[in-house]
Image (cartoon, rainbow, N blue to C red; front, side, top):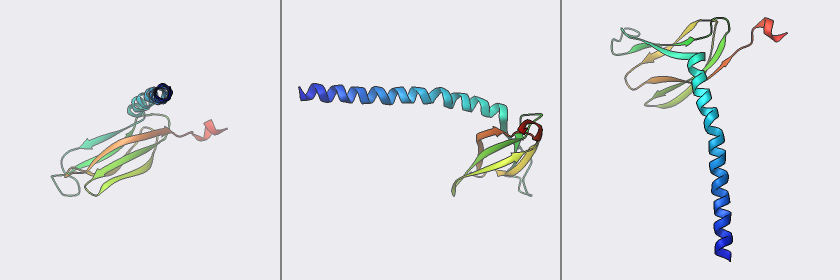
Length: 119
């Protein structure tokens, strides 16, 4: 009887975890799809700060009429560093040099409300 009760409890716990994971998955997919429409990393080759091995890295605002706040993760040999950047409507922002083991990725983005929208 104890084994059956223990098995039923374990099955219920596993089902609950699976259900929670399934609920989180669509949100994560929707968020990653929205990131591309909100902000993106752009790499410009040809050197960065006088070093031809590196590339210039920009974060571009994909919205033409609204400012955004993009969270960018810089991955380097020293570790990961997340930074928030505010980017004007349809603008771009230089965020650093890529290459040599350093890369950048947008991990979050939020459209900022304009003055007219706040009222």
